[in-house]
Image 1 (cartoon, rainbow, N blue to C red):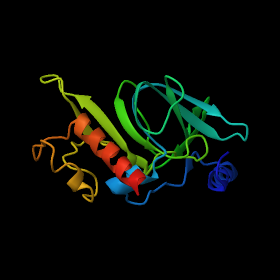
Image 2: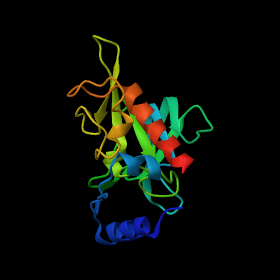
Image 3: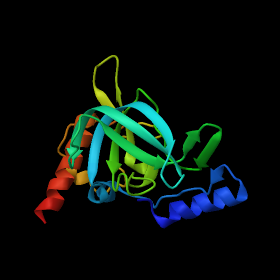
Amino acid sequence: MWKPFAIFILFVCNTLGASTASAVSFEPRDFDALAVEADQVVIGTAVATNSRRTGTREIVTDYRFNNLEIVKGTVLTTSLTLTMLGGTVGTDTLTVAGAPTFQKGIRYLVFIAGNNTVMFPLVGGQQGIFQIRMEASTGISRVHDYAGRAVTRLPGGKAHDLIDHLDVDAGEPLTEAVFVDAIRAKVAQLNAK
Protein backbone atom coordinates (compact mmCIF):
# COMPACT_ATOMS: atom_id res chain seq x y z
CA MET A 1 0.00 0.00 0.00
CA TRP A 2 2.15 2.90 -1.21
CA LYS A 3 0.95 6.46 -1.27
CA PRO A 4 0.15 7.98 -4.66
CA PHE A 5 3.27 10.16 -4.41
CA ALA A 6 5.51 7.08 -4.59
CA ILE A 7 3.68 5.89 -7.69
CA PHE A 8 4.04 9.35 -9.25
CA ILE A 9 7.80 9.39 -8.57
CA LEU A 10 8.19 5.97 -10.15
CA PHE A 11 6.11 7.00 -13.16
CA VAL A 12 8.29 10.08 -13.71
CA CYS A 13 11.51 8.06 -13.26
CA ASN A 14 10.37 5.34 -15.64
CA THR A 15 9.07 7.82 -18.19
CA LEU A 16 12.24 9.91 -18.21
CA GLY A 17 14.58 6.95 -17.79
CA ALA A 18 16.08 8.47 -14.67
CA SER A 19 17.62 6.44 -11.90
CA THR A 20 17.21 9.17 -9.30
CA ALA A 21 13.82 10.17 -7.97
CA SER A 22 13.11 13.64 -6.67
CA ALA A 23 14.78 14.62 -3.44
CA VAL A 24 12.83 13.97 -0.32
CA SER A 25 12.69 16.46 2.53
CA PHE A 26 11.10 16.26 5.92
CA GLU A 27 9.60 18.97 8.11
CA PRO A 28 11.74 19.81 11.15
CA ARG A 29 10.67 17.85 14.23
CA ASP A 30 11.50 18.47 17.86
CA PHE A 31 11.69 15.77 20.51
CA ASP A 32 7.99 16.10 21.41
CA ALA A 33 6.90 15.68 17.78
CA LEU A 34 9.11 12.63 17.32
CA ALA A 35 7.63 10.98 20.42
CA VAL A 36 4.02 11.96 19.60
CA GLU A 37 4.01 11.00 15.91
CA ALA A 38 5.77 7.65 16.26
CA ASP A 39 3.67 4.47 16.35
CA GLN A 40 6.79 2.64 17.48
CA VAL A 41 10.16 3.60 18.91
CA VAL A 42 12.60 0.73 18.63
CA ILE A 43 16.28 0.14 19.33
CA GLY A 44 17.88 -2.55 17.19
CA THR A 45 20.99 -3.57 15.32
CA ALA A 46 20.83 -3.40 11.51
CA VAL A 47 21.67 -6.92 10.34
CA ALA A 48 20.52 -7.21 6.72
CA THR A 49 19.33 -5.28 3.68
CA ASN A 50 17.43 -6.65 0.72
CA SER A 51 16.26 -4.65 -2.28
CA ARG A 52 13.34 -6.00 -4.29
CA ARG A 53 10.52 -5.02 -6.59
CA THR A 54 7.01 -4.74 -5.27
CA GLY A 55 3.94 -6.03 -7.09
CA THR A 56 3.67 -2.62 -8.75
CA ARG A 57 7.34 -2.78 -9.88
CA GLU A 58 8.60 -0.19 -7.39
CA ILE A 59 12.09 -0.79 -6.03
CA VAL A 60 12.14 -0.89 -2.25
CA THR A 61 14.72 -1.93 0.31
CA ASP A 62 13.94 -3.97 3.42
CA TYR A 63 16.21 -3.18 6.39
CA ARG A 64 16.12 -5.89 9.07
CA PHE A 65 16.95 -5.22 12.71
CA ASN A 66 17.61 -7.76 15.48
CA ASN A 67 18.40 -7.55 19.20
CA LEU A 68 15.37 -5.31 19.70
CA GLU A 69 14.40 -3.14 22.62
CA ILE A 70 10.90 -1.73 22.33
CA VAL A 71 10.62 1.80 23.74
CA LYS A 72 7.12 2.61 22.42
CA GLY A 73 4.51 0.46 20.71
CA THR A 74 4.77 -3.25 19.99
CA VAL A 75 6.73 -5.54 17.70
CA LEU A 76 5.29 -9.04 17.45
CA THR A 77 8.47 -10.80 16.29
CA THR A 78 12.11 -10.97 17.38
CA SER A 79 13.18 -8.85 14.42
CA LEU A 80 11.85 -5.73 12.74
CA THR A 81 11.89 -4.96 9.02
CA LEU A 82 11.59 -1.37 7.79
CA THR A 83 10.66 -1.05 4.11
CA MET A 84 11.62 2.12 2.24
CA LEU A 85 11.45 3.31 -1.35
CA GLY A 86 14.74 2.98 -3.25
CA GLY A 87 17.49 0.45 -3.81
CA THR A 88 19.12 -1.66 -6.50
CA VAL A 89 17.64 -4.72 -8.19
CA GLY A 90 19.92 -6.19 -10.84
CA THR A 91 21.10 -3.26 -12.95
CA ASP A 92 18.17 -1.02 -12.00
CA THR A 93 18.73 1.51 -9.24
CA LEU A 94 16.25 3.91 -7.70
CA THR A 95 17.93 6.56 -5.58
CA VAL A 96 15.91 9.08 -3.62
CA ALA A 97 18.15 11.99 -2.62
CA GLY A 98 17.91 12.71 1.10
CA ALA A 99 16.37 9.35 1.93
CA PRO A 100 17.95 7.71 4.98
CA THR A 101 19.64 4.31 4.85
CA PHE A 102 21.07 1.98 7.48
CA GLN A 103 24.49 0.36 7.76
CA LYS A 104 24.79 -3.26 8.83
CA GLY A 105 26.26 -3.75 12.30
CA ILE A 106 25.21 -0.35 13.67
CA ARG A 107 22.73 -0.12 16.54
CA TYR A 108 19.96 2.41 15.95
CA LEU A 109 17.07 3.98 17.82
CA VAL A 110 14.32 4.77 15.29
CA PHE A 111 11.01 6.63 15.52
CA ILE A 112 8.61 4.75 13.20
CA ALA A 113 5.18 5.64 11.79
CA GLY A 114 3.33 3.74 9.08
CA ASN A 115 5.83 0.96 8.39
CA ASN A 116 4.78 -1.00 5.27
CA THR A 117 2.20 1.64 4.35
CA VAL A 118 4.31 4.73 3.52
CA MET A 119 7.46 5.11 1.43
CA PHE A 120 9.55 6.42 4.37
CA PRO A 121 8.23 5.10 7.70
CA LEU A 122 10.61 7.20 9.79
CA VAL A 123 9.21 10.19 11.66
CA GLY A 124 11.09 13.21 10.34
CA GLY A 125 13.36 11.14 8.10
CA GLN A 126 16.92 11.35 9.38
CA GLN A 127 15.71 13.36 12.40
CA GLY A 128 14.02 10.21 13.68
CA ILE A 129 17.15 8.05 13.49
CA PHE A 130 19.79 7.89 16.21
CA GLN A 131 22.89 5.73 16.49
CA ILE A 132 23.57 4.02 19.81
CA ARG A 133 27.32 3.64 20.32
CA MET A 134 28.98 1.85 23.21
CA GLU A 135 32.10 3.56 24.57
CA ALA A 136 34.90 1.00 24.68
CA SER A 137 36.52 2.61 27.72
CA THR A 138 33.39 2.77 29.91
CA GLY A 139 30.91 0.32 28.39
CA ILE A 140 28.29 3.10 28.44
CA SER A 141 25.99 3.36 25.42
CA ARG A 142 25.63 6.93 24.17
CA VAL A 143 23.34 8.58 21.62
CA HIS A 144 24.49 10.09 18.31
CA ASP A 145 22.36 11.52 15.52
CA TYR A 146 21.99 9.99 12.06
CA ALA A 147 25.19 11.69 10.87
CA GLY A 148 27.15 10.40 13.87
CA ARG A 149 27.30 13.65 15.86
CA ALA A 150 26.99 13.38 19.64
CA VAL A 151 23.52 14.21 20.98
CA THR A 152 24.05 16.38 24.06
CA ARG A 153 20.43 17.47 24.52
CA LEU A 154 17.01 16.44 23.35
CA PRO A 155 16.19 17.54 19.79
CA GLY A 156 14.38 20.88 19.67
CA GLY A 157 14.80 21.61 23.35
CA LYS A 158 11.09 21.57 24.23
CA ALA A 159 11.36 18.60 26.54
CA HIS A 160 14.40 19.64 28.58
CA ASP A 161 12.31 19.52 31.75
CA LEU A 162 12.14 15.75 31.32
CA ILE A 163 15.87 15.34 31.86
CA ASP A 164 16.69 18.26 34.18
CA HIS A 165 16.48 15.99 37.21
CA LEU A 166 18.83 13.39 35.71
CA ASP A 167 22.60 13.36 36.11
CA VAL A 168 23.64 14.68 32.68
CA ASP A 169 27.01 16.31 31.97
CA ALA A 170 26.69 19.23 29.58
CA GLY A 171 28.67 18.52 26.42
CA GLU A 172 28.77 14.75 26.93
CA PRO A 173 26.59 12.65 24.64
CA LEU A 174 23.37 11.58 26.34
CA THR A 175 23.40 8.01 27.52
CA GLU A 176 21.01 5.55 25.94
CA ALA A 177 19.31 5.16 29.33
CA VAL A 178 18.68 8.92 29.71
CA PHE A 179 17.39 9.22 26.14
CA VAL A 180 15.08 6.21 26.47
CA ASP A 181 13.81 7.42 29.87
CA ALA A 182 12.99 10.81 28.31
CA ILE A 183 11.04 9.13 25.49
CA ARG A 184 9.10 6.95 27.93
CA ALA A 185 8.38 9.96 30.16
CA LYS A 186 7.07 11.94 27.18
CA VAL A 187 4.88 9.02 26.06
CA ALA A 188 3.52 8.61 29.62
CA GLN A 189 2.85 12.35 29.78
CA LEU A 190 0.92 12.18 26.50
CA ASN A 191 -1.03 9.10 27.57
CA ALA A 192 -2.05 10.83 30.82
CA LYS A 193 -3.78 13.63 28.90
